[in-house]
Image 1 (tube, rainbow, N blue to C red):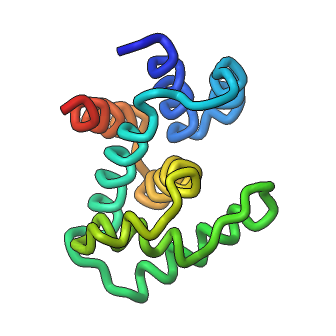
Image 2: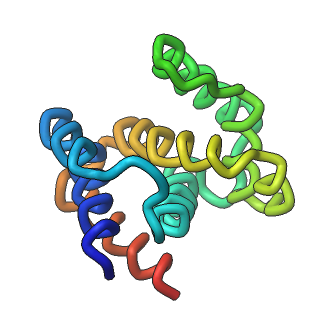
Image 3: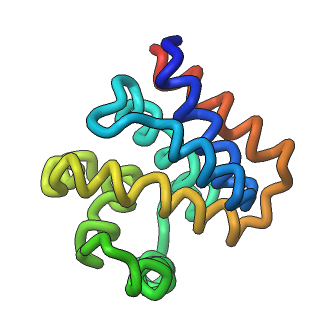
Length: 143
């Protein structure tokens, strides 16, 4: 694992543990531009988070409710995310993988970590459980 990806992982750990000061510090240490390996890690983390939050088959109402909650959280951010993109990403994990390609890569890499944060928060995962989730995502992304 390269140093840049290690810094990104520390950012994710802090974010998902709701350590906003730590996550901001780690994020500020990341350079502008692309972070090799972060896309695979985001995808793995998001997939694991979706499966924990929704199970194998989610009720469309549960997905809509999550998307609505997510949109409230990002409504005031500089990122312009479409609710449809969030829904497509979730559904792509839950058995409709072709939908992943309908979301622009930059949008997916913006949505996946923040949506994973919301799912972890809704699930009430402990810091140890967050570490286990991220470790599992690292292992999955490295395959």
